[in-house]
Each structure stands twice: as structure tokens, then as C-alpha cells.
Length: 327
Ligand code: ADP
Ligand code: MG
Image (cartoon, rainbow, N blue to C red; front, top):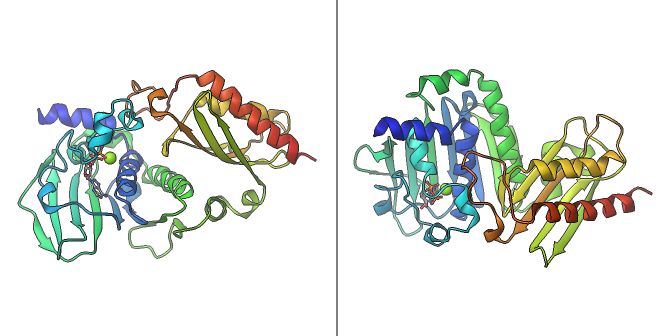
């Protein structure tokens, strides 16, 4: 059974960046306003996240890495909720099947923190009291130590590090109220640093540079009939980037939609020179029951009801803004 679980977990957690995405979502769910990520070898040797969220109660530490254990009962029971295409109490369990996990956590009502060591979905020994601030630190070490094939498939720590930087960058831009830092273990310079309570534009400037941050236009669009609203910051008709940059959050979860991506690229084709691309940061909110719940958790790609109609409605809204900026 352990082996079956391990294989399943290896499918879900394919690389450090996948694990980190789930850990960041947990910290955000815990109400953190500060999230610090530290990695060694692109997260393969060590992936650590420290937050100042609500913490985990000592009595819950026993089960926190068991499959289908979640404290988010409301979402868990609502099968139509967006969370159902992600994980349902599976993230920490999966991570603990492919890494050594240490959780150090403290709630506001506890006098001290507690530490637990986990592997294969289980707490290895009774939790021990220790010093620590309110919040949670989760450290995953030696990722895929027990899945040789997976470990060999991920040979370059530099590539994994780049993916980790990408995930932290995107979450930090979207969650502008929350401060984020990403560092390599032992280095003083951060790879990502955004202060709490900044603006989306401030964070885009910090991460993607001054040039693009000056050329952004705001899109704000809602369609009650189709049941969605969108806010976006997109580069104008006179500016382009070499590498297509598309940050898409649907109901605050980082996802990809190739149909939406292509549709937006098409809008820009009329304005930009060949081979150049727009910068797009988009936050889309759709009624949860319209999200396709059958998408596998590893699939970044999502589908939603009325996809064609919503996509063309967004296209029209962006096009109108581009026309306005192109004078
Ligand atoms: P889910 O997020 O679907 O509930 P996870 O496996 O991601 O499942 O997490 C399991 C549980 O562990 C969560 O429901 C939550 O109670 C607890 N948890 C995980 N990370 C944190 C964190 N950073 N702060 C507080 N609680 C956490
Ligand atoms: Mg989770």
C-alpha cells in the first residue's frame, strides 16, 4: 500500500514547484500575510515555507499528513467548488510520501510551538514542544528520495529553481497584500521579494522590471449573463516582450488555459511586430459550479462552462482597451 501511495503521490507532485504551489495555497488559506520560501538545489534537496498564518493545533498534527484529511470542510463537501480540481486534503499527504517532511507550528492560543516529523503519510514519533512564532513552517527534504525514476528525470536543480521562482513570482503578484520572499539557502540576496500591502503594479515592477510596469493598462470587465468577472493588467498596443508572459488566476488559483492564452495573443497580433508578445496578468472569477471538476490535479490546464463565450467576451474587452491606448 505504501508503494501504491508513493506512486500516486509522485504523479501528483511531479516537481518541487508543484509541491510549493500547494504549500503556498495552504499558507494563504491559513491567513498568512508573510510567506518566506527557502530552497536548496531548486527545492530537490530542501523546500521550506514559513508563514505567519493561524498555525495547526497540536491535536491535529497527528493526522495532518494523512490522505483526505482537511480542515477545510466547507470546500471539501462542496463538490462543485474550485478546490475540487486541485486537492482535497491530499497535498501534504502526497508530499510526505515522496519526501521527509518536518512541520513546526504554533497557534495563537498555544504557549509554544510543536514539531512533528512525517513520512509516508504518518507522523513518525510523538510531536515535541519547541520554540517558535505563531504560524507554520513546513520543510520537505530529499524530494523523491524513494522514487529513483522521478529523481533521475529531474536532473537540473537550476531548471527546478527557475520553476520555483516562477511560482513564487506569480503568487506574489496576485496576492499583493501578502509579503513574499524566496531565497536560496545560505544566500542573503533574495530571488523574489515583495513587501506586504503593495500594489499589483509594484510587484510586477519588482519582478518583471520597470519597463513593462510603465506600459500596463487596466481591464475591468464583468458579464452577469455569463457569470464571470475579470480584472487584468495588460501591456498596451505599443509595447511588447520577447517572451510571452501570461499570468492567469481563476478564482485565485494559478492555472493555465491555452484557449484563453491563444485568444489574447490573437488580439495583440494586429498591433505587435511579428515574434513579439504581450504581458498579461489576469484574475478571472467564475461561479465555482462552472469550473470543470474532472480535470486531474496535476493538470495546470483548466476548462470551464461557456468557455468560448467567456473567452470572446474577454477578447472584446481587451481589444477595446488596446484601441483606446493606441493613439
Ligand atoms: P487541504 O488544503 O485540501 O485541506 P492539504 O493536504 O493541503 O489539504 O492540507 C491539509 C491540512 O493541513 C489543511 O486542511 C490544514 O488544516 C493544514 N495545513 C496545511 N498547511 C497549513 C498551514 N500553512 N497553516 C495552517 N494549516 C495548514
Ligand atoms: Mg491544500
